[in-house]
Image (cartoon, rainbow, N blue to C red; front, side, top):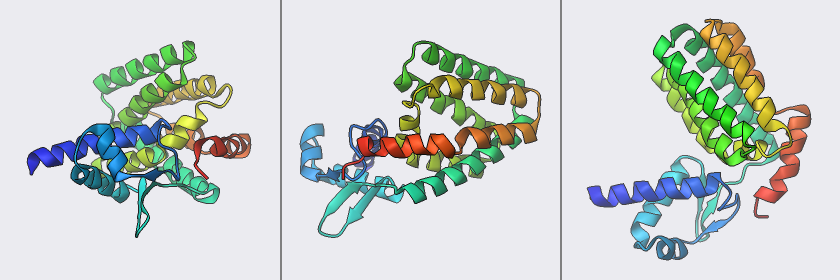
Length: 221
């Protein structure tokens, strides 16, 4: 049982990553037999992995139609980013008050890693380094419930956050916004940190138009 659970957990992580990076597109049918053959396992751990992903909202399980990569409509996407922006703001406000000197050093190191990815004009590498950066802020809130909820929604939005980074000049803009966030956290300014992170995450105006224009390239219609 433990071995099966570990296998299904590994498969869940692998399939989730494939969805995050666009190898499996929103709306795409997930055939259990095809996946079992691809990963050279039985259908049982595949089914368990898909059920886990469904519980996270990343996959939809439909009667007689099987599993699909979940699609998010434009209105729901805006609503989810609005909530994500508030989660980030709350985490940032607490992190500015609660992060230790060692945690500041970790955040600065993650910020430097983002800079290297930006300088290399590598949006995929920046995507992963960016996740580490934000994860440190969630953890730095020292509120485990809030950090867990922020991570859940962050994971749900991963394909769309990654897509945003491919918009022209977004890497440089994102890094500049990070720079201000880091300084506000180190200075212990919770309200400024919250305002900066809220603005960093919110999609509105031209950023929203760019994201919606990119959705057609991401989703299976």
